[in-house]
Length: 286
Image (cartoon, rainbow, N blue to C red):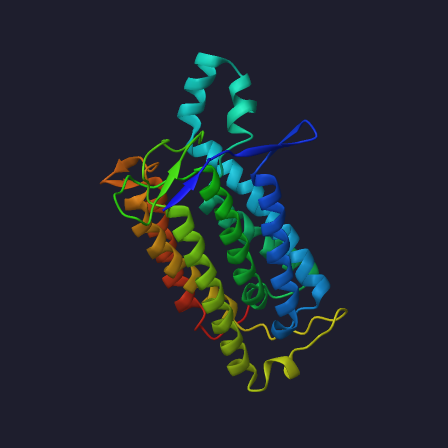
C-alpha cells in the first residue's frame, strides 16, 4: 500500500513550482536520450533524431492541450459562466491534457519534420515510438504522485491513499492505475524497441549496427515500412490495455454504451493499429 500526500506542487525560495514541470523535463530528457542512443541502428543521424523528437514533442504538447480543451468545452463554458474567464487561465490552461491528442500531435510533428528533412517517417518511427512511450511512462509517475487520473476504490493491499490531493478522493484506498500504466508502458517500450531492431535487421539482411551506423552527420535510411509496423503494434497493444484500464479508473465518466471517451478512443486506436500493421506489409514505400 502506498501512502502519498498527493501534493501537485512544491516551493523553492518562495516560488511555487508545479510537480509536472520537473517530471515533464525528466521525461523529455530520458526519451531524448533513448532516441539518441538508438538512432544509428535505424539509419538516423543523432542530429536528425534530436530535431524529430523535439518537434514531435512540441506537437504532442500542443495537441494534447487542444484536445483536452475540446472534450471539456461544455464544462469550460459552464465554469466561465459561473466563475468568469479567470477559471480558464487558472484551471483549464494550466491543468489537464488529452493522451490521444498528444499521440496524434506527436505523429504529425514527426511526419512534418521528416518531410522537411527529406527523411522517411516510416524508418523514424522505429526510433521514436519507444522513446515517446518511455517519456510518457515517466510522466505518468507524476500523475500517480499527485493523484491525477485516480483509480476506483479497492480493498486490495496493492492500493494508494492520498492525504491532500486536489484531484483524487483523499483518505480512500484506490487502485494505482497511473502506476500500473507507467509499468506497462515501460515494458511496452522495451518490447517495441526489440521488435524494431529485429525487423530492421531482417529487412537489411545484415547486422543493424554495421549496416546503418550513420554517425552524427549523415542519415542513411531504407524507406521500408517497418516503422508503421511498430507504430501499429503500439496502437494495438496500448489501445487494448488502456480500454481495459478504463474500467478501473475512478475519473472516467461513461458517455455512451458504458464506455468513456478514452475507451472509445482506445477502440479507434486498436482499429488504427490493425490498419497500420496491414499497411506495413504493402510493398510500396513512403
